[in-house]
Image (cartoon, rainbow, N blue to C red; front, side, top):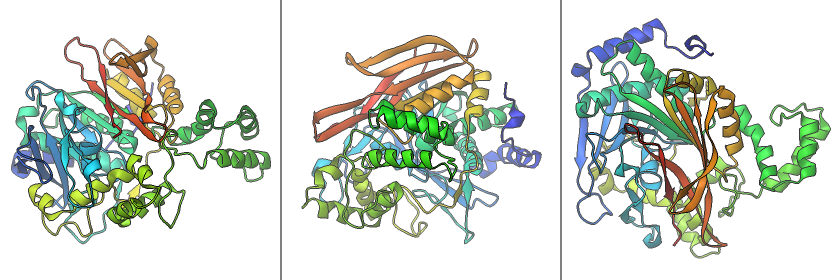
Length: 493
């Protein structure tokens, strides 16, 4: 069994500092929060409780982390509290709030480049849980640093910040201290989820206040083992009939299963990988069923560069494309239809309504800040999952079955490496009588369990109108109730 000493444990000095900060938190954790009753783009009063605010971190409060908080629409006193870490990295909590699991969504069908309309989402997880959406690390969304110092972050620094943010937030929201807490996140955010969960546990064990009622965690399409998920793309491409049996067998034999660290003198391996690249480079690796959009020049096949083309002037890109055949592609792309958030979040009336501090962000708001100085200093977090199971916590791990960036085969591989016992065999799970994916459940001891689920892609309208189940939600366990999956579906129009 992997022990805590093999993980990143804070030094005695850092632990002491954290203890001092939490011990005197009542004096230093003064809230800067506001209740939002109306929002530009939404007609009338919001039918749920929305709060925004800042939590200050750092010796002198120099790091200001912005958050959105939505209370459960069912029973906020008893329903669980979800601390959500948005994927990215560097992607705003607003992204998850309006595009993924929150109660609002943009009406893209009526968007003309001006302030977009907001509508209610029938798939919001806030129907069963209260959710904190955070802009982090510093430089993400409306979060900022109030010194001239260049700030760099990392997996370990972010983990510490998330942990301290949560304890300070709870001291400002004492009615939620006893609520069952789950830490969740997708994509890169899901990678640091188990790190944050362990940091919470260590803080509780050290006696830090308030004690956090952590019950479990959930992570989706996350790069848990960086090297493994890259290698698994070849096997996934073969399973999805994107490459031939011959290419796959040649790659396995000549590359010895390692497609990342290739010997430059291994010409056969390099050659077959080039053939595989030619078969897959026109595939949308984020969702292999969705067409790969061609944007106005400059054209690029690189994911980050394609995103930055849109970020430079997203609304102009959209309006220009409306005159061209690529418009339908832009509408259907989950990356490209984010232009609505740029128009909304950069509107002065919106920032005033959200109580964003004026003049604190230097450039326009972006859904994802690609210029963050960030060190990926923890490449593999499988040991963190193993330790959480050993300590008796529940986990939900899910994968979209048409994602080739972090293939479901990689998730299956690392979950089965945890030395856990299968309790419920592989079976379909359904929504409205239709198969929505497949799941199996593992047990570690009398308390700990890990549920793995795939989320099935769906074709809603016709061959050119794709939609997918983006995320698997959970109606969190309460008493003896079982976990139930709730899909978030992006409908075609």
